Image (cartoon, rainbow, N blue to C red; front, side, top):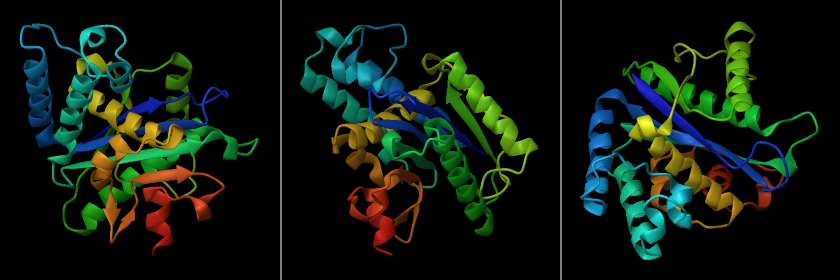
Length: 253
């Protein structure tokens, strides 16, 4: 089984930012323990005297606000973030595969919304990934686990899933490889949701702020076939001129 851990970056509505991102990592069940241990080792390296878990939340670490981060120099915080991203890149796909949708909110029509657009894209691409494994004689089921978010967003995600399952599915059809409803958990309870946070933040920084540094570290983990990056989706009306990895990989084929 593959567990897809998802988190959001940016606001799905409003004009305080241009992008909303839903992203995370799909992890083969047998690798979860080892990845969690790698993150525990990072904590032990940077906080050897800390007996309680330190939550790795990318935006908080980068900003240095609160917790143990305000007393840590920026360079050391960046080093720690690089160590967390390295836990993803040391896993050979498909044992860990990244998925994300970056939605340019100003490009949406009046009838479109960022949250359902992102959720549909990510879940469909995860389902396609599992279908491809099945064709390669590696049949796996998938389960979606999401970071507990604002109540309104949580209810919206659940309503969308009900529509996908009870209705006609997404615009590409019904899911064939995903099991049960999405589950919600607090990110401080599982290191895997902290990896999802780092993934979505890397994508958000790339599209919202033009900061490619974090995404460049993990771009090879996004689901891809024959040079086309299927795991990263960019919604924009300017695909022809966009030079992001997702848009470029599609134009080159």
